[in-house]
Length: 166
Image (cartoon, rainbow, N blue to C red; front, side):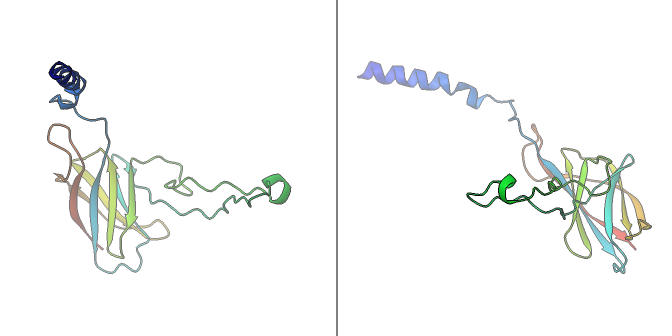
Protein backbone atom coordinates (compact mmCIF):
# COMPACT_ATOMS: atom_id res chain seq x y z
CA UNK A 1 0.00 0.00 0.00
CA UNK A 2 2.85 2.35 0.90
CA UNK A 3 4.58 1.62 -2.42
CA UNK A 4 1.37 2.49 -4.33
CA UNK A 5 1.11 5.80 -2.42
CA UNK A 6 4.70 6.72 -3.29
CA UNK A 7 4.15 5.87 -6.98
CA UNK A 8 0.99 7.94 -7.02
CA UNK A 9 2.81 10.91 -5.46
CA UNK A 10 5.66 10.65 -8.01
CA UNK A 11 3.16 10.48 -10.88
CA UNK A 12 1.26 13.47 -9.54
CA UNK A 13 4.46 15.50 -9.07
CA UNK A 14 5.66 14.77 -12.61
CA UNK A 15 2.30 15.56 -14.22
CA UNK A 16 1.94 18.94 -12.48
CA UNK A 17 5.55 20.10 -12.72
CA UNK A 18 4.85 22.32 -15.75
CA UNK A 19 2.04 24.13 -13.93
CA UNK A 20 4.42 25.79 -11.51
CA UNK A 21 7.14 26.76 -13.97
CA UNK A 22 8.27 30.28 -13.10
CA UNK A 23 8.79 32.68 -15.99
CA UNK A 24 6.03 31.32 -18.22
CA UNK A 25 3.17 33.69 -19.03
CA UNK A 26 -0.28 32.41 -19.93
CA UNK A 27 -1.44 32.99 -23.52
CA UNK A 28 -3.96 35.73 -22.81
CA UNK A 29 -4.84 39.16 -24.14
CA UNK A 30 -6.25 42.27 -22.59
CA UNK A 31 -7.23 45.80 -23.43
CA UNK A 32 -6.12 49.04 -21.87
CA UNK A 33 -8.53 51.84 -21.02
CA UNK A 34 -8.36 55.63 -21.36
CA UNK A 35 -10.99 58.04 -20.05
CA UNK A 36 -11.63 61.46 -21.65
CA UNK A 37 -13.67 64.04 -19.73
CA UNK A 38 -15.15 67.01 -21.59
CA UNK A 39 -15.01 70.45 -19.96
CA UNK A 40 -17.43 73.09 -21.25
CA UNK A 41 -20.74 73.05 -23.12
CA UNK A 42 -21.30 69.55 -24.53
CA UNK A 43 -24.55 70.19 -26.45
CA UNK A 44 -22.85 70.19 -29.88
CA UNK A 45 -20.59 67.16 -29.26
CA UNK A 46 -21.66 64.12 -31.28
CA UNK A 47 -18.51 62.03 -30.85
CA UNK A 48 -15.16 62.00 -29.08
CA UNK A 49 -12.15 60.26 -30.61
CA UNK A 50 -8.83 58.88 -29.36
CA UNK A 51 -6.19 59.08 -32.14
CA UNK A 52 -2.72 57.63 -32.59
CA UNK A 53 -0.52 57.93 -35.68
CA UNK A 54 -3.42 59.10 -37.86
CA UNK A 55 -5.77 56.31 -36.74
CA UNK A 56 -8.74 57.41 -34.66
CA UNK A 57 -11.11 55.39 -32.55
CA UNK A 58 -14.34 54.08 -33.93
CA UNK A 59 -17.61 54.22 -32.05
CA UNK A 60 -19.63 51.05 -32.59
CA UNK A 61 -23.01 51.78 -34.10
CA UNK A 62 -26.08 49.64 -33.44
CA UNK A 63 -27.34 47.70 -36.41
CA UNK A 64 -30.60 48.86 -37.97
CA UNK A 65 -30.93 45.78 -40.18
CA UNK A 66 -33.73 43.36 -39.30
CA UNK A 67 -32.66 40.13 -37.65
CA UNK A 68 -33.34 36.70 -39.09
CA UNK A 69 -35.81 34.82 -36.96
CA UNK A 70 -37.05 31.30 -37.37
CA UNK A 71 -40.44 30.16 -36.19
CA UNK A 72 -40.30 26.58 -34.91
CA UNK A 73 -41.68 24.21 -37.53
CA UNK A 74 -41.50 26.78 -40.37
CA UNK A 75 -38.51 26.94 -42.67
CA UNK A 76 -37.18 30.29 -43.82
CA UNK A 77 -37.85 29.44 -47.45
CA UNK A 78 -41.39 28.22 -46.82
CA UNK A 79 -42.78 30.82 -44.50
CA UNK A 80 -40.43 33.79 -44.14
CA UNK A 81 -38.47 36.04 -46.42
CA UNK A 82 -34.79 36.26 -45.62
CA UNK A 83 -33.65 39.61 -44.31
CA UNK A 84 -30.32 41.32 -44.62
CA UNK A 85 -27.70 40.12 -42.16
CA UNK A 86 -27.14 42.53 -39.29
CA UNK A 87 -23.89 44.43 -39.10
CA UNK A 88 -21.18 42.75 -37.07
CA UNK A 89 -21.20 44.17 -33.53
CA UNK A 90 -18.49 46.81 -33.14
CA UNK A 91 -18.30 47.46 -36.89
CA UNK A 92 -18.48 51.19 -37.54
CA UNK A 93 -21.25 52.12 -39.94
CA UNK A 94 -20.21 54.22 -42.93
CA UNK A 95 -16.48 54.02 -42.27
CA UNK A 96 -14.31 51.25 -43.67
CA UNK A 97 -10.99 52.38 -42.14
CA UNK A 98 -9.70 49.97 -39.49
CA UNK A 99 -8.84 51.38 -36.07
CA UNK A 100 -7.12 49.57 -33.20
CA UNK A 101 -9.10 51.73 -30.76
CA UNK A 102 -12.76 51.66 -29.85
CA UNK A 103 -14.70 54.15 -27.80
CA UNK A 104 -17.99 54.46 -26.04
CA UNK A 105 -19.92 57.27 -24.46
CA UNK A 106 -20.36 56.80 -20.71
CA UNK A 107 -22.35 60.02 -20.18
CA UNK A 108 -22.52 63.51 -21.78
CA UNK A 109 -19.07 64.42 -20.46
CA UNK A 110 -17.25 61.08 -20.17
CA UNK A 111 -15.97 58.78 -22.94
CA UNK A 112 -14.02 55.56 -22.47
CA UNK A 113 -11.56 54.17 -25.03
CA UNK A 114 -10.02 50.72 -25.29
CA UNK A 115 -6.71 49.83 -26.90
CA UNK A 116 -5.93 46.15 -27.44
CA UNK A 117 -2.67 45.51 -25.53
CA UNK A 118 -1.38 48.90 -26.68
CA UNK A 119 -0.21 51.62 -24.27
CA UNK A 120 0.88 54.57 -26.44
CA UNK A 121 2.96 57.32 -24.84
CA UNK A 122 1.16 60.08 -26.78
CA UNK A 123 -2.26 60.43 -28.36
CA UNK A 124 -4.61 63.07 -29.67
CA UNK A 125 -8.11 63.40 -28.29
CA UNK A 126 -10.77 65.35 -30.13
CA UNK A 127 -14.44 66.22 -29.91
CA UNK A 128 -16.51 66.31 -33.10
CA UNK A 129 -19.87 67.78 -34.08
CA UNK A 130 -22.41 65.66 -35.96
CA UNK A 131 -21.16 67.30 -39.20
CA UNK A 132 -17.64 66.03 -38.52
CA UNK A 133 -16.32 69.48 -37.58
CA UNK A 134 -13.58 69.30 -34.94
CA UNK A 135 -14.81 71.29 -31.93
CA UNK A 136 -11.71 70.73 -29.77
CA UNK A 137 -8.51 68.71 -30.01
CA UNK A 138 -5.31 68.30 -28.05
CA UNK A 139 -2.25 66.10 -27.99
CA UNK A 140 -1.68 64.42 -24.64
CA UNK A 141 1.15 62.58 -22.93
CA UNK A 142 -0.17 59.35 -21.40
CA UNK A 143 0.91 57.68 -18.19
CA UNK A 144 -0.43 54.13 -17.86
CA UNK A 145 -1.02 52.30 -14.58
CA UNK A 146 -1.30 48.50 -14.68
CA UNK A 147 -4.50 47.36 -12.94
CA UNK A 148 -4.15 43.60 -13.45
CA UNK A 149 -1.78 40.86 -14.58
CA UNK A 150 1.86 41.03 -13.49
CA UNK A 151 5.00 43.03 -14.17
CA UNK A 152 6.57 40.05 -15.92
CA UNK A 153 3.60 39.16 -18.14
CA UNK A 154 1.85 42.51 -18.45
CA UNK A 155 -1.85 43.07 -18.06
CA UNK A 156 -4.59 45.64 -18.41
CA UNK A 157 -3.68 49.26 -17.72
CA UNK A 158 -5.58 52.51 -17.43
CA UNK A 159 -4.82 56.18 -18.00
CA UNK A 160 -6.77 59.34 -17.39
CA UNK A 161 -8.92 61.11 -16.84
CA UNK A 162 -7.82 63.19 -19.81
CA UNK A 163 -9.50 66.62 -19.76
CA UNK A 164 -10.59 68.16 -23.09
CA UNK A 165 -11.72 71.79 -22.97
CA UNK A 166 -14.46 72.72 -25.43
